[in-house]
Length: 325
Ligand SMILES: *Cc1c(COP(=O)(O)O)cnc(C)c1O
Image (cartoon, rainbow, N blue to C red; front, side, top):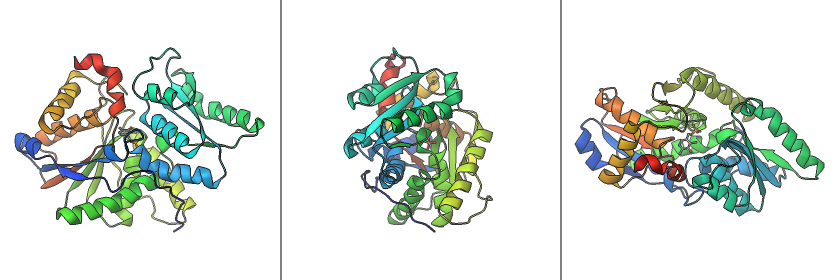
């Protein structure tokens, strides 16, 4: 296996903590939180684990400008902008949203960090590859060396973030003396779940890796993750085949990506008050609300312990303040 270059950006290992009051209140398996919201203060969340590999690759290729893309409140774009500034790189963000979007949450930080921002419409997003190619060409003409990181850093490079996180989880389970039946996360671009699935295989974890999708559908994520894993095997010269199970639980997207219904906001409020844990409505709150629904329906009754990965996202809460009042 070829081992990729890596930067040290995240504060690792992140804590694994039991939510005892919530577990008592809910009944069912003991719920643990893997605090990947604590990988950093401003670059916080799951994207930082992936960026350790994506940005290392960019530097290895001599890049001086990072390009990435996402929604207007993308946590990934904000984390990339933080890391770019920390590394002395320029950062271009292509954001799906209106040019008059308020400076709030992640977008406020993107602007503060000096990222060059280009807004595109949802219709233009269909041509994102061509838009990126044009920007790369433009920058090269100026003598720059751009490096493109795809949405959510979910590609064969970014997969390493949660391959290595799986090894960290194995050590967590040993030190807490637990054998969780499931590790649960939110799927937005698929790299977290894909990395966990590969990591489970490579590091021989006896735990099912399952995600609730917060956009698109199950078929989309199965295809996307299958493709990323195929490219990973080719690039890093390590054959696994395509038989690893990809478990995505669909049905909880609700009103759409970035939009949550009242049930999700109630769960966010409840977790804040019961455990002092803050979730966001786009990813963690939506997925955790789905997890509680499924626990109450008995889906996870075959295990004593279940781990939910807190993938971060706190800045995405502020632009939705009106729904918390
Ligand atoms: C991006 C993101 C996710 C989803 O992770 P993917 O690897 O994109 O599937 C989950 N939670 C938060 C807070 C995120 O920013």
